[in-house]
Image 1: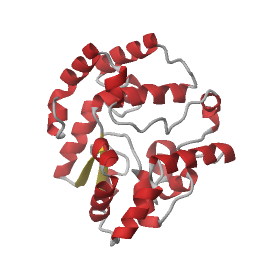
Image 2: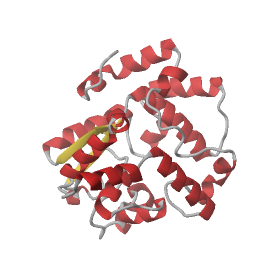
Image 3: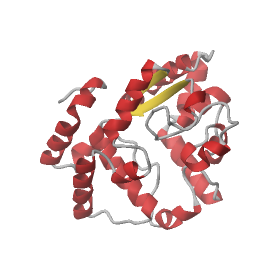
Image 4: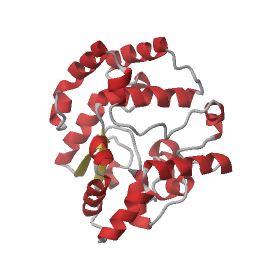
Length: 244
């Protein structure tokens, strides 16, 4: 989403290093360093009056995804962050139990991001005080042009149909995977490359892993899928997901 927004606003982006200048990560840079920044900022924090830079926040774009697929994606992300290539069934099953117990990755709570449910509900409630666009990952994947056109309208940009097509093409999974490869090769620090990630990179782990919708159907057992669906059914219904 950050690439799509920056491609729309600033034109074609060539690296995540450049992206981090245009739309910096609050968790990496901190509120003090971003105090004078005007524009897009990425955060995983829940919304509250205590949110860093909340008093300067005019609007938000919140990307949401089915919790079962969030679980699978974050299992792989956690492996990459920890620099471990362990992908045994036992390791995955332990992660599923931890995710269910904590209603998300326990590290999210440790880092002040809250559970998956608390985080999403905070931004649903934020609509009372600011403009919030909810973008479902599944919709973004199925029809990126429609999502990009919505984003352009939400950001009050005057973009042509061709501009939107170009932003979509420049934000495609294959192109971002190519940028990731170049960032790693050139050691450009950003989303895709940081020195501490080198062991994970050496073992073949990548941020742009698959981009697939429905990974959970393949990796979770029937019982696990049922338990995850039950745990989050109230919120997923509010977010417009079917319960099938």
